[in-house]
Image (cartoon, rainbow, N blue to C red; front, side):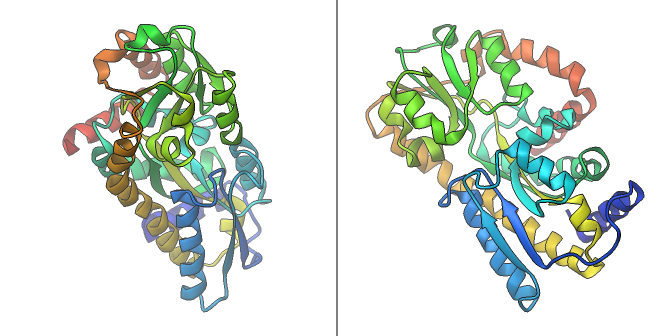
Length: 327
């Protein structure tokens, strides 16, 4: 979000009655669900260091990774009340409050990780952030991303029919639930810290995950099949509490918007660079490795589209048009 959009968001918050205009504490807390070594967490640390330097240490940011401040639903509620200052959060959680953001998870909206990065940087995508102060009570300052979504599973799956009835761990949001229900799987929401053991002991049959975590957290050790589907992108958004934002100066708005926006944007470049090598490392483990496209899912994608063209029609149409222009 540029300076003008950031200032417009501030005005929108003021009109909805957030904040008193009084200066707030300069020690900001930023929450994430990702582990300390994750790309998003490292970007948050970089933002904190950049803000301290740019403000001559007038501002500091303490980063709380790995759900230390709660899950994303809890952190979003804290942002709304002003109990939490900032967060790097999946767009998935935002879509639970602002349904149009579910359009980002349209299957095969992005053809690959480079296309996903370009779409998240587009004017169409960033314009959607301007609605957040009025609808969710937060200010969005830019998009980041994880890698494309893949499926790691057991049972010798070779096509979508093999996923029928399988318990697949997912991030819990409606667009994802609808996708796996359309496939005929049993989508099973589960926090990241529980996934390794659940996969190891058979509590779940497989997982919907990006290559970074499949590789870095050794999930492949407890699966027999990796299906490289690239079926959804998985965007992240940088958020500031509306109440906190309303108490900051215009100078602070501009500084935070620029530096936080740059930090999350850097994750797009990171995944463009690393997603392919992570997939190759997984391939090199020797587990069965399948490359699949939209045809793998049969009629499930059409079923998902039918649901979401009703639910988020304008946003979905706009993102599809932007994606087509970027191909």
